[in-house]
Structures are given as C-alpha cells and as structure tokens.
Length: 162
Image (cartoon, rainbow, N blue to C red):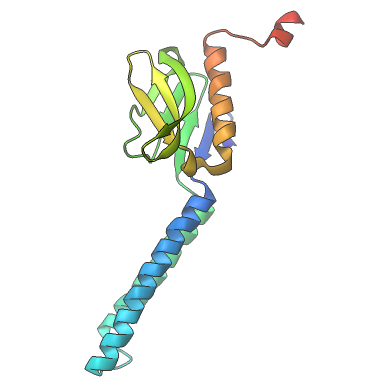
C-alpha cells in the first residue's frame, strides 16, 4: 500500500502473484527452447539460426517485463475519502463508486476463490480477489471499513467518549 499526500491509498499486485506468473512464463520459455533444440538437431540448423535469435529475444523481453512487474506491480485498488477505484482487474464488477453508495464490505468465497466483495446500494458489486493483494488483503479490508465508517459519520466509542 502507498499513501499519497492527497490521502489516496494504493494497493498493488502481491509479489507472490507476480512470481507465479514468472514461474509459468519460465516453463513456457523452457518448452520453446526445448522445441528449438530438438528441431535444430533434426534439421541441422546452425547456431546462428533465425529461430534461435527469436527465442533469445523472447527470453530477454520476458525477463525485462518480469523485472518491471517485480519492481512496480500494477495497481489493483485505490481508496480515498471519496470512494474506491479498481484498476487492472477484469471482471471485478463496478470499477469505482463513492462511499455513500456502498452498503457493505465483506470477504466471501466466490467461484475463483476468496475475494473482498463490496456491495452497493443498487445491488451491484465490486470484487477484488484476495490472492492479488496477498498479505495486504486484511489491511485493505480494514481500511475500506474505516473509510466507509468515516463517510457515514461513524466513530469508535473510545473516540466519542474523549
């Protein structure tokens, strides 16, 4: 999570999720390289073949993209005093809403696993998979509850007594 001076909290992809993608990509590149080695042995291609150059460029490109993803994972959720916004999340439902339209924030089991589900007053929902946020999912849900309570004017009893 990052908090900007304007009070907007940003939650990004978990690095564990990026590492899962890296593992799948490494397996895919490994299969491509094996196919290239077998094909070059059978067809007597030289070491300077075009296919080897293309695979080398694919490998370098994949490593560069993964490096960028590891250093700067994509944003998933932005929270502000006005509302929330989902980013880089396909099929998440409503992409943005004001806190005044939010009825509840819960963690539920959905077909793809556990997710933070934001229920809006018009029965629409926003869904953020917990696996994308990783260990920060609890922090994100807690902050969403705090911002929702602040928007409705709710305070903790200890704060009200002082």
